[in-house]
Length: 194
Image (cartoon, rainbow, N blue to C red; front, side):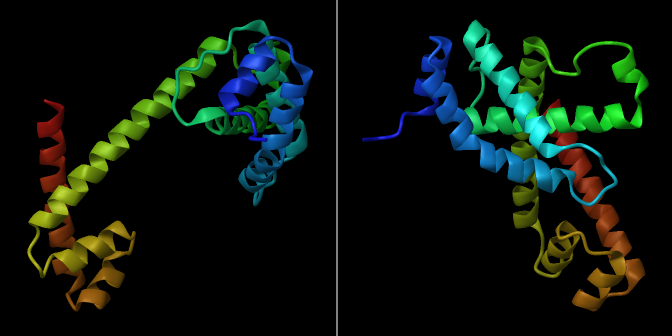
């Protein structure tokens, strides 16, 4: 038997099917926990990823059961749940840094409008990043053979000294070329906006 799709599970959740709720938790819990633990690693953070993921599932299931869950995004249920988890982690970390925020009241959880707003922002950001990738590709194809290695090293995030060593140019020459890249790209971006 084929596993139900996310949309089918959501529809069953809206109808109050507890089995569908369990399937959603089982399907995404370990991935969300892994993501939350990775996002929370490396710093002095006292946020418990397990509790964050549990809060996200409670919030999500409440939205689904109430029928207030809007499916206005691409990428499916994983994208929504991972987005909710990332936002909740940020909020929890902010609460730890500024305990006055939780003292002023509020659950710290996003309401439906805030969630939809975050998702729309992410979509707009993804679209502009795609446009920027296109612009970089077009610009790269217009470069001469001696400029291509400099451009590629720059996109890799190398320093001017590293670029100079890789392409056998002085630091000053590399800086001039990078300045020209920035000027050209800025003009091309402005031309696309207008």
